[in-house]
Image (cartoon, rainbow, N blue to C red; front, side):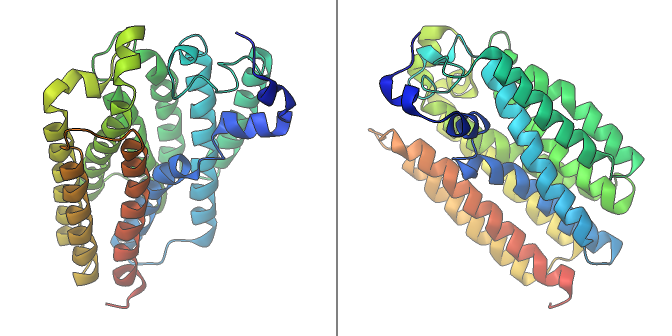
Length: 299
């Protein structure tokens, strides 16, 4: 497949930016936010503010991991992406970047993630390594596993376990409440994201949660968001995160309900799926802001 004249004129630097998806910050932030939730909530358990240097490592680590994950995904799917409308113009799919360049960028981003992980505790460092096989295998799962988004959600769950263990030195029952919430939340927003590709996925012959749940997909998304909200509320109750946090959870619940209601329309515009995904970034920020007052001692 040859690249278009427009992409031939595009700089290599910008092609690399597109490969890493840094031109689409929503996908980077939606991984960073659960890591920040965990860092802040664990600090409440530890009865101290999260260390600034750890916050920097968490932010940079999520960016490096996300970058590596995007490249791994595109390397796996470089022959499938050209057949899907949403992904056909990705640099590896349109062959505007070579396979060798893709592998080189993967090595650099992976090295950055590794160096950052060495700052963490031994348990956190081990969890970083445990996450690697899940991140690597996820893009291939759509070829043989009926709900590949579940594998992605488990990968997202490591964004909770790693910083939590870095703050507290272990994995207590509170982290698993947050882990369930994040896994369910990821299943919800990524199933919405997958809805936009249903026709192309069927033609190509790959799986997705949007196809798996079929006509019940909106109910499934509502259930995932409800579980996420329940997990967050339970965490808030156990950690006594306060009324500001509960207000944030209530706002999130109302927004998730509104999103699910919009997905029941007879005719859904394609842009709605991407909008819903991006709105979940703002929901993530709302939850994070709700946690902060209790942790810094305002309420």
